[in-house]
Length: 639
Image 1 (cartoon, one colour):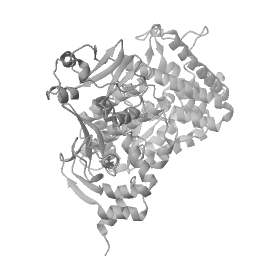
Image 2 (cartoon, helix red, strand yellow):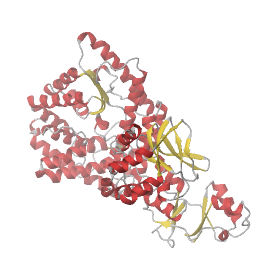
Image 3 (cartoon, rainbow, N blue to C red):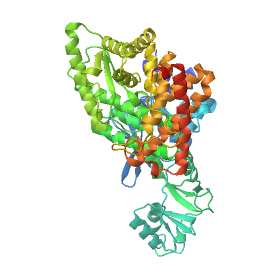
Image 4 (cartoon, rainbow, N blue to C red):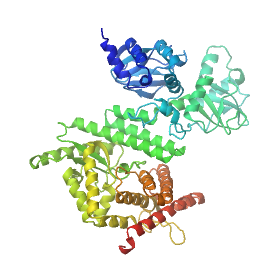
């Protein structure tokens, strides 16, 4: 007789690691012995410090939160949903759980025998690699297909991990560790810990770490009466301390804490215990960092129930951005991660708004991000730029259809405003009837802008040609793209007008290599980093890709990268444009974080010589790319 339940479990498990690399017989053996468990919302599967179960778990339906209890705080470390594996600790170490697993909503779990998988591990090297990697790192990647896969979710990824990936980043540690003298008593050390409200204190001499005391030491050795509180600190301190250099990564810190069974690491100038103490890294710091990693944020977004929760997550994303910038993570990774988070927030705002509508959408539609978000270059929170396209309908249904989507757009833009994306001052939003159009209307709009170019229409093209579909039917935007290229082919002089627009801002340096600054207005004597440095590169990349019929490349770096392949004779110039754009984008982001604004305007008198030289080094590619446009499109005759 067929075991239909086992077959259903088999069909589910085969899609997820590590079960996807099992032999068919091995997987069916597991499926036949799986225990199906229903967990009500709020109930625990296991708790921190609890002895390990005989099973580990896979989420079939629902969501399981993994929490770390530290003092009075319960910190969300991760959210496990469909296909995620948790509770693997018994497979590696027969030790108590380091986290609690609690159902965030009604859930169905598959419980798999630890002993059974141990037997399979012995003969299946791929599964063994997965388990070891999963245990030794909680690193996640937002680039997995489902935006929640583990970095080590398959053997191929295990072999090709990029050491510069954003989550293999330097751990943030406290740069002001609390210390006391080696001559202090335990009571004196405890009083310092209490007054400073810290859970540990380092014993140091001449800034060299000698030992450490934690709350745990006080509980186990003093509160129990084993050692008198008036004894010298050396009676209970742990020594020597475990030391690492400032560049320690999160993964290295986790592994070290597991290996040495400690909750604190000393950070010294060169990583050796004999060098100067510069900081301390606690287990709490690591847990907080993981609770703020991209995949956890994206999972939180997907499960958010209201706009206030999305606003809170957006603030966490801003902190994540700040940390990435401070730790010099490659800007291309940062922009991808922040863009994924921004897109996920927009999608959730749309989902919440659709739930508020009285009926389902009357026809298919697409929500478009424009400008910097459309190019996936929106690192700092700026104002909204978006639009909506909907399927063509009959004349008699047009008004009701458009009214529906205008109401939807108003709900979405309002939610985005509450979350932190300001309304566009120029009303370039889908809630504006001018930017909420049917497919045929959009085609006609683009054709009119292209065949009847004016100063306004060219400006609109630079905004709307950088659209990116965030939500909805891809066929609609594909048809829009085709119509743009068709119109350009019939009126190629449009590219010349677009080129002239790209040269409106001259190279950022004057004749005597001085910065060209604003001459009047609110930002007088300040340097406009956006208009004079970033936009010339953005405009050039857009124009060149349009002229070469390059589709589906909206990001400036991606556009120049494609141009390198298409025009190898200009590869050096395009590569220098990429480098310049990365430096300028990072610089603007740092300025925005520092001054809590868009980072657009720079006060030159506050830059040191090194910063000025670095900026000036980015300006030559701007001058060279503008010269290329000038020659290619005969722009000198149009100026």
